[in-house]
Image (cartoon, rainbow, N blue to C red; front, side, top):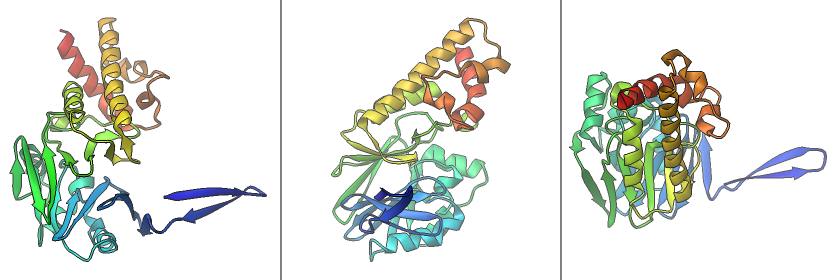
Length: 281
């Protein structure tokens, strides 16, 4: 945890509480709850679940991050990484697969593996699942669920049942989401997937990017997806043309549409228009 203390003369002193946050280079690790850590920095957030027999990672960032990930894991555990669960195929979440495959098992939804292969990425997982699976290691159970399309067609929701924490990958984002239509993403499917996520008993969520979320944050994320879908539906029914969608979708009450260079605005709006236009025909 980082605490900022304001002193006389407008001097800000940054106090690092070393029991909860360590960093070297571009990445940092912080404790989420006893036995679970999160590695942040460039790329997707990594979950680090400690057990008495080894470490289970959720995602593994970019290829160039492998050595630093290993160093940060070693700062909280003397045991090696035994499993990596990919939340989806994007390279900022699965980029170090090729290195971890030398000594660990990698698990992903079958569509995520298919996307890795089809997109000519390295490090395709050796183990896939369809609906749900679990990793049991050192008396710890980590569950993974496929609840439908959303960010892509192969997103895994990872659940730590003993801690009541989930890792949502890029199904959760604290700034604005990206609907990857080229790899099976869907705004309509995303709402259903979030509803499925909310059936799990959790109070903390690790998003794909950004700080930790709580259950209310996840509900608000789901609600904003529904509101934006309805807004686009209303605009299309009112005669909206595709080329005007980027400006028309903006609304001060919808944070995603206000984010400067946000993934939602720059990469998803055209696809959202086409998706909903097909629904209202």
